[in-house]
Length: 150
Image 1 (cartoon, rainbow, N blue to C red):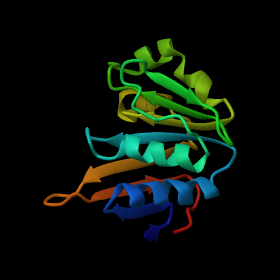
Image 2 (cartoon, helix red, strand yellow):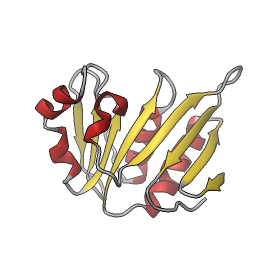
Image 3 (cartoon, rainbow, N blue to C red):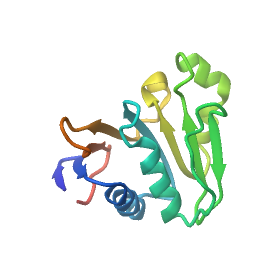
Image 4 (cartoon, one colour):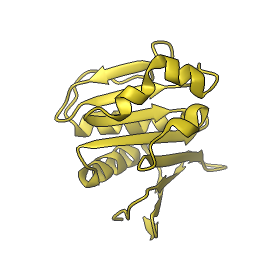
């Protein structure tokens, strides 16, 4: 892991690596946090949320809420998993009531965050997932308004 000011870049070579990153990050986060997840289909966004859920002690299977849009889970902290893939823009997200989740306790993880980029609070954590060419590895770039520990 390399840390550059408020940016952390991690390479994940497996589901286990991605889950380990989620656990590591969760230990640093306050009680309430919004995570904006960016990346193409299959880049690891849902896998990361599954790692968060496991670290929070959530036993229910965690799947992408593409058709229901929002899944809520109870663990050591609440987890709200939002998927904006089927939405067009910020107006659709506003009609969904997404901003209300930003003020709730726990972790709110939003896939396809670029569809409502202007709605996220300034202190939101932004995670960018990329599939590395010629491999199964992922590059995950985390950007924060506060310093992160590597």
